[in-house]
Length: 225
Image (cartoon, rainbow, N blue to C red; front, side, top):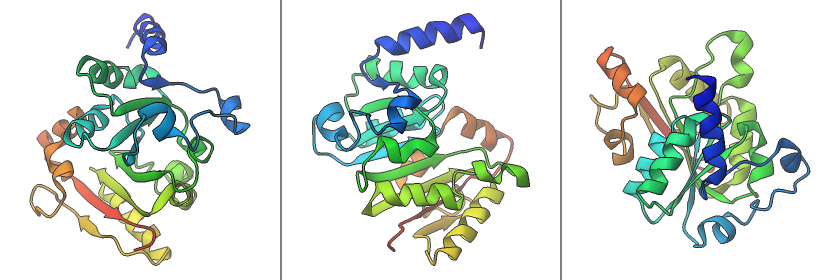
């Protein structure tokens, strides 16, 4: 994407009612106005809140919102030029249960209050296979502790990935925490025991992976299971 296109998208994002872009300083000082008040200030309802972390173009966020109009969805990514597409689509299709947030995932504790979130989706995150990149894996111990803090006691985490490595790594982390996954599926289109939301929604990249013959894996779990 050219720099002119990126700039155009950044400017357009600022005009979207469904895009929120707090400064890092605002978050670090716990001055974020939506923290603990997302239902009241953003969605203006009492429906459950679901996050997609590293949402990219926002395809999954938008399609989840279409499938479940009685849930609120927030797509989070640090690259606003990416989720511009999802935000624009949500506006065009008049989806009032979708917001996009430009922020880093490690700052979630500054964005959401304890027990404020009902579900978290991790869809095709970078597996960060190199050992020195392990601190960036979205299912490492640090991130899991953040998710546990912002999730309700009944909250659930979903991981959908083409990386058998990340699937196995996550299972290992859950075992360390004495957590048994609810579902652990190593090939969702062969072993059909995954939720409809997993099967019915395919991103552009997922379709590419399938065309390359890659298996798509899925697992979900609760911290208090």
